Length: 177
Image (tube, rainbow, N blue to C red; front, side, top):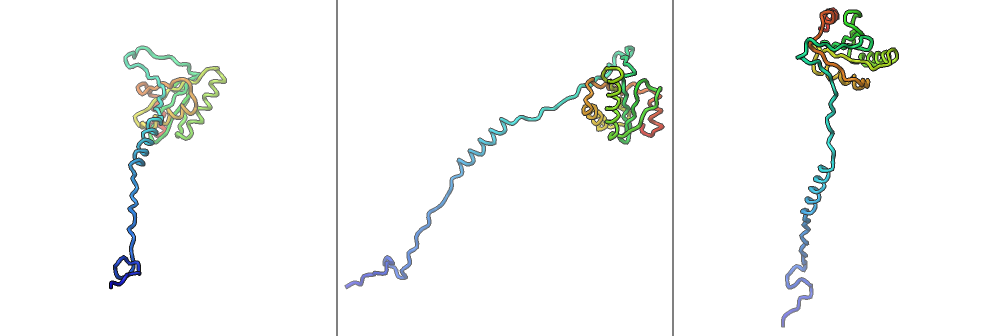
């Protein structure tokens, strides 16, 4: 007669039966689709910053005979020099020596002159910016930013052609031309 195996080993010697582990595979296709949908949604709904331009007035090169007349009492001329220095004066050139300042100090002068012109004449200050050969593009952008910060409402006039000799002489004496 044959012997019965009661050990539960399934007829194998040793008695241990190992169970197979289930394969745990996660399908991430839906997650990738969701990620791309979110990226697309945020790209389409985001508003990009728009560049802001400042109005400037530059004299016409063709009309050399016609000069724009400005009231000396309300005109501030800013000369951009080298070494990040600024020379400015109120009124007509040659009548008062220009003040030499750095860009850190020029905002106070612009605000002070703006208030004085507003009190005495009741009008807006007119700014004429004259970049010289020694000035850099950064200097020009910096002075335009300062005018914007000071809330100068009239568009600044940019004149890099009509720099007179008295302005050049004063800037040479100060070492910024």
